[in-house]
Amino acid sequence: MPLRALARVNLAAIERNVARLKRDLRPGTELCAVVKGDGYGHGAVPAANAALAGGAGWLAVVTAQEAAELRAAGVVARTLVMGALSDAELDVALAADADVVAWNERFVAELAARAQGAVRVHVKLDSGLGRLGTRDPAEALRIAEWIAAAGSLELAGAMTHFATADEDAAFMARQLETFTPFAAEMRRRHPGIVVHAANSAATVRDRATHFDLVRCGIAIYGLDPMQEDPLARELEPALELTSYLAAVKATAPGQSAGYGRRFIADRDTWLATLPIGYADGFRRAFSDNCELIVAGRRHPLVGTVSMDNITIDLGPVTDLEPGATATIIGADGGERQTAEELAQRIGTINYEIVCAISDRVPRAYHRDGAQA
Ligand SMILES: *Cc1c(COP(=O)(O)O)cnc(C)c1O
Image (cartoon, rainbow, N blue to C red; front, side, top):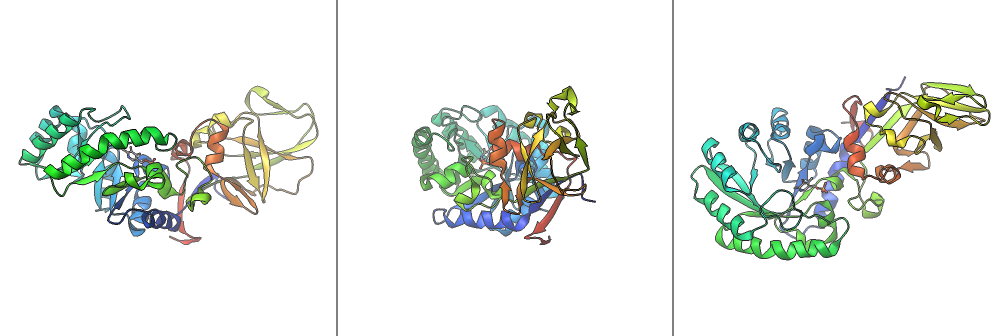
């Protein structure tokens, strides 16, 4: 019997996506593979190794613990921890030999006090996202001077992050206008630093955002930064999510399925129960609002998504039997369903669809169908 739910990840697809992104970079620009959030649900360590095999030169995560997990698995590549770090987290990041990000004096002082060797620090300018970083380029330059002057610290980079690279090109251009002169001044004062700004959307949209390094997350997994069909941008979705028909039963008019009796049959039909639910990350918002692919055909999800099960309507005539595989994300026969399509149904983005897939769903790794 198949597993109740399974996420199959094609590591060769991640490799190819990285190579494909690298192909369009400005000469000399390196690619940093973002593997935060357990590699966007794909598994941070296998995703990191695949990205490195595909030509990524750097890795990035958000938390110190995520960097520690990479190191524990033997991943030695240069790793940037992009998130805010509490003092306790800082020690974990330093122990993992990660690069860290700074934007205020207090943090730089804390870093200098805790650093054992030469800790590599990137200064962050908030050019418009309004989250981490300082809004004041002069302050960012001052912080960079402190870092450069501190014996235990090494000024490694200057960075910013875009708010609208996936939607509003005009605002991205304004952020770039703020960041570019700051980056030039940083480079003039501190030759050799690594300047970086672009996420996946900026990377594919505008080469002027590339600088020395691009930080690509969503696109390395073959998901589209603009929520369109990834294949149109030559990105290959690496993850497939499947479940299977655990029960198939005849249902008469008036009989219901699932909590709240949200579905009541109005004709004779066959319902199948699949053992996947919101504890697996299959969001409850898909209640009455999703289709699954079985044997190359789409079937509607009916009723409420519960914690552990969903039901689909196979119709009044079916030859499908228990054990048949049902595809949630991926292709089967001539049918295909993308994370982008699922996201659109419930008003979210592909990022949230794949990150939601919980630890209860085993990940299986392969390379184009062969054992990884
Ligand atoms: C998550 C993240 C990225 C990667 O974004 P994608 O849209 O997934 O490419 C880049 N930079 C920072 C600071 C991030 O937090």
